Length: 415
Ligand SMILES: Cc1cc2nc3c(=O)[nH]c(=O)nc-3n(C[C@H](O)[C@H](O)[C@H](O)COP(=O)(O)OP(=O)(O)OC[C@H]3O[C@@H](n4cnc5c(N)ncnc54)[C@H](O)[C@@H]3O)c2cc1C
Image (cartoon, rainbow, N blue to C red; front, side):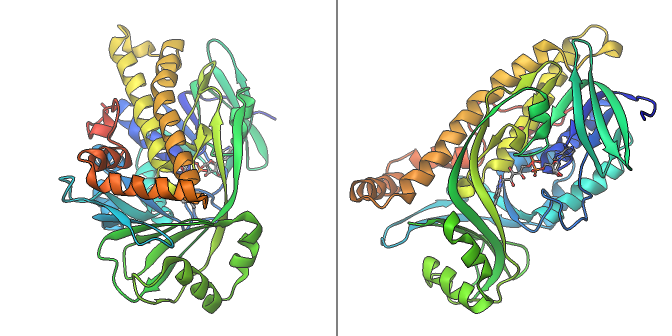
């Protein structure tokens, strides 16, 4: 049975970190927006707002500033003022420093669940955004004048009509399939084991990235006395590592990281995430676009997946706003025209390609144990530290400040 069919300007499929951020970013435009999210935010199975810690880049920080959320996000975050990169079994290391780059912090680390609470409390106060949750989009019809999404909610089916359908339903996006867009995927045969622990010495706002033959291990400062870790292990070893008792787990992760932060203790709950590189072959279909992990999936080595998705959000907002400014009749504004979708897809493709290549390259360069590659890697690390400008360029990419930046990524509000 179908209920009455409300008509929206934009329906966002997936209210995770990226879908919720898009709804809030567009809110000042007064468009009628619906967010359809399959899993309630406080549900222990919520896939986006879980216990992972995420490093927010400077461009994401600027976006939250422009959206009026930053004070709350910052209060729950830990700044990264220094990034220390090392290679297990080698003495050399490289670093990035906030002061050297002329910024207060290179990024901020926030727990996804906490970020979710900030986004949710703002969404709840935004009366132009309707939230349907838990509700799952399970069918889609795309026509020249409108898109119609069918969602399952409270054991019934309801249809939502809109001018633009945005798929923000994550890496295994079923909405992307419904749009007829295929995806190229390659498994890294690795899993990220994620959790937090205590370190004997304080991190002092430092983030550590240590490359080991198994894969990278990141130790991140988080608010409070603890440190977050993202430890990449071979897929075949993941179940064993996840099954270790606390003492054995600490012994193994300590052996990988060394004693730079003294002894580790009091490790928390661990969770594993399979690591897959993915890229949608197209970013748009009739009256619909892909953003966030529905469009691209990265290895977490460079902590850029969410940040890249946030730049999708910023660029889509610019494309919609510019089209609205160009339209003579604002009352009949249509955010889902071919011109908007084409511009968005062209703009985002280059940034996404570059970052996919960069992270994939890092995984292979630092994952290799071949002697020639190891020598190259050491030369690379020396060059990185000594060649003027190289570090600055790298920092610009890490902070998400390279290339043509949309308004929100520059800290300019959308209105
Ligand atoms: C271990 C690890 C560490 C990471 N660290 C970082 C980091 O430090 N920095 C960084 O920038 N990125 C990081 N990332 C990447 C980041 O987590 C992702 O890029 C980000 O979660 C993508 O958000 P999203 O909203 O696009 O997708 P998701 O977080 O997957 O959210 C998708 C949402 O859509 C909902 N959904 C799915 N199907 C439907 C449907 N049919 N109908 C309605 N709703 C649906 C889901 O319930 C979910 O809430 C990390 C990733 C991993 C695995």
